[in-house]
Length: 392
Image (tube, rainbow, N blue to C red; front, side, top):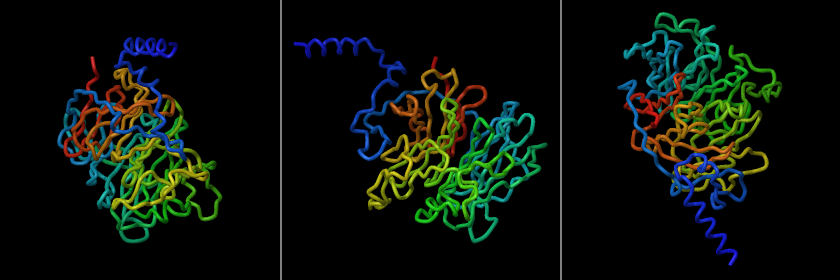
């Protein structure tokens, strides 16, 4: 009899719940069948995914691949086009910024992310990453530069880092940039398609997250400072191709998401000196369906906090703090290139508790930024930049 009474009480509680209440979503436990026996990482299957319709309005029309965007203090916007242009969008008009360095455009390489120094209003520094052919070898690799914008032109350009060697391969340049609360700069470089050498070797660039001081110098407490032949700018390694990077102000950490192979996209909490295992451990497989490795975890590797199978091809990442979107506040947004929507990932601390599709069918989402005005802006390939309208 007692089990029947318990079930009746439970049913009444369920009926009294508001299914649309975000706090209820966050309390939902991730079921055991989403856990891997040998890993702390979790996934939530597509069958448990919900969908919510949001309206949007186009803010910047007619862009090809608007990779990065940064808001200037006057409310105008700097946009990087992968083809090699920086666009200054102000008062409804687009103006090409002069003085952009030569960009190596090949495959996934081109002009990539852009961001402002946290103290931009006082020092005027902006930072961007791009594929560059400078340096040893044919082809190109990812570079980080800072500059100032004056009268529509980049001045005082300084190349702060250039990954090497160059490669003619067209994949996995990364790259995103962010700052932590101490003003240190993080940026990512993908493995450049050389998975068997670059990600696990700290004497080589590629498959890494790097940390620099804002002037390009290497922090004395970087994990591999003083290691023989190490690339001392490396902060973490064993990455595949991170195209999403945020500073999570709630946890005080740098988070990245990165493309897996066929399956196995990941969200990783970056830690000093951590090895995230690619390609020694992965939840994905080769594109032809053959096995990369049987291992999804190991004692020498740091597990992701979340992974996607099948892959969504994530690009663009945002941690939402704006009060304009109470149903999204405190959660993550990630763009899907493959399935052409924005994915809302509900968070309970560092645990993803639910998935939700926003802006379904909008197109290949390249970037997501919460603007200083509190609105969320989404860059969509061959469309432009749209603003998500908060729900009334």
